[in-house]
Every structure is written in structure tokens, then in C-alpha cells.
Image (tube, rainbow, N blue to C red; front, top):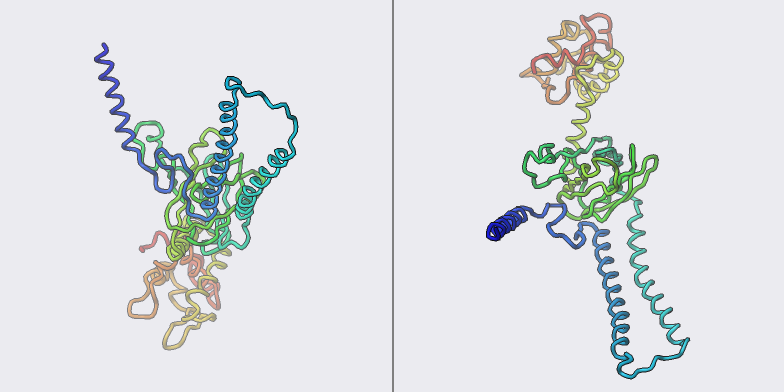
Amino acid sequence: MKKWRGILGACAMLASGIACAQVKDMPGGPKVDQLNLHEGVTQIAHDVMWLHWMMLSICLVIFLGVFGVMFYSIWAHRKSRGHQPATFHEHVGVEVAWTVIPFFIVIAMALPATKAVVAMKDTSSPDLTVKVTGYQWKWGYEYIDGPASGVKFLSTLSTPRAQIEGREPKGEFYLMEVDNPLVVPVDQKVRIVLTAGDVIHSWMVPDFGIKQDAIPGFLRDTWFRAEKVGTYRGQCAELCGKDHAFMPIVVEVKSKDDYAKWADEQKKKLASAADDPNKQWTEADLLARGEKVYGANCVVCHQATGKGVPGSFPALDGDKIVLGPQAEQIKTVLHGRPGTPMPAFMNQLNDVEVAAVITYTRHAWSNAGKGQDPTVQPSTVKSSPH
């Protein structure tokens, strides 16, 4: 029996060792057997680390000094060695010493700590502002200014449910991965304005040295300036309900050029998502949108009057294609005219923009009321060969 217990114990230790060996430090997140604070990639994180060790060192010195003197006094002046207890009650020097020395110690600790706290709260003159809203159980991000102004999305846990329920092995970023991370540029001051849509949440990224509560009905802010490109991870640090553990924070810090590219891509996605080609658009909305598209893409060649440039660019005012069936004009706008200056717009304009600009040309100038099917729906463009 003892033999089998020993074998089972050895197997358990081996299995435990194998499991531990498979666990690795998470890039941008917690480390295996981590006892210290995160080294951090912001000045605030560095200051917090320095303050932590400075105050811990002072407390350790005081502890050793006070208890060292106390235990030495108990040992060296014990009754068995013939020492008699002192009978004095007051000593001016001692009273002054234990008042003045702690005062200077507190000042030495308070000055750098106050400086760090003031720096944490200084959200003035940011290069970029992002509004962050906590929900049960996800984060909402909205870019207020900068290249990605107007971009907004939800960031939700992307760890598969099968891993959470134990039906699959846990991945490298178990419970610390999201579908849409917050993306910011390196070496720029990013202001985070926080609120919540339901209960209190808390936005915390240890590598940035920041943690700020998100409270419904209030706007609170914090900031960071990441000094290194990379991916950094945090979590909601306020107990917010059943799935509190399932709302991680992932921040991707990119170079300024890469951030600009990302912002441009997101704006295009946002515009594409806003323009639903399956929706039935009103004629008024198409005309308003089409006028803007025409002014941005067509007016240089065809002129604001639709008369074009004789010998170079044809007139759209009274043109037989513009006044004819929709299919031919849609084909021309999408695919252009080979051998002529007319480019293909199928990779430059989305279906809503194509429908809008065609509708505009069919209603503008002297074309109004003369052509066939003057209003083109985006769904018609979508169903045309691209």
C-alpha cells in the first residue's frame, strides 16, 4: 500500500511539474511566480516602482532599528544579569527625537509620493483623447480626436468558451485576449476619459502604472505615455458582477506611422459600416450624399455645371447615358472607360456612394425630370457586376 502511495505521489509531482513547465510569462501581462510590480513602459510606472522600493526600504530600516534596539535591550538588560529598571518618566531629548525624526522621515516619503500623484492627475495637453466606457462585461472605446477621430468599437473577451469550460486546453492568452484592442501611438500622451454604463468598473493596465475607476454618471480621467511599442494587458480591477473576470484590457502601442495607417483603415471600415447598401435610402439623402461625392471626385473633370471640358471630358448635363437606363451608368462608374480618362471607381467608392453620385447627376442641372429611373438604390449597385 505504501509503495502505491509513493508511486501515486511521484506521478502527481511529475504531472504538477509538467503543468508548471508549460506555463510561461505572458507577453504584456502577468509573469510566472511574479512577486514584484511590473517594470512598466511609462514614466509613471517607473516612478511607482521607485516609490515602492524606497518606502519599503525605509520601513525595513525602521523595523530593524526599532525592534533591534528593543530586543537588544530586553536581552542585554534582563533581570537575571542584575540590571535594575529605570524609574524616570520623562526625557526631553527622547521626546524631541521621536517627534522630529519621524517628521523628517514622513516628509522624505511624502514629497516624491506627492510629486508622482500630481503627475498621475495631470491630464492636460494630451496628444490623443479616448473615451472608455465599462459595460457588463466589455469595454467600449471611442476616439475623441486625432487621426482616428470618430472611430468607436466594443472590446470583448475572445477566449473560446470551450477553453473556459475545460473542453479545450487553455491558450497562451487565456482570459487576457480581446477581439478589438485599444490602439495608440508610441511616445504620445494619451488621455483616457472613463465612465460606465451600468455598475462601477475599473480600467487598469499595470505596465502603464494606471488604474482608474469607471463610475456610471461620472467622467473621470487618467493618462499614459507608452515609451515602447508592444502589446500590454490589464483587467477590470473592480468587482462588477458575474463575469468580472471576463473583461480584460488589451492595448496595442504602435509606431506613429503604423498608428496613422491603422486609423485610416478604421475610418474606412467605419464609413463602410455606416453605409448600408441593403437599406432603402430616401431620394433626399442620396442627393445630399451624391453632391458631396460629386464635388470630391467628379467636379474637376465634369465641372460643377456638368458641362465638362469640350474635347477632353464629356458633359453629363444632357448626356444620353445619364438620361438612359441605370445599368449603363452604373457600369461606367464602377469600371470606368478603358482608353479614356474615366477611371474605375469600384475600389474608391462604396455602393452607397456610387448610387448617390449617379442619383445626383440624374437630378442635377437640366437632367431633372428627363431621364429614366432617376433614383438609384445602393442595393441595385451592389447587385451589379463588380
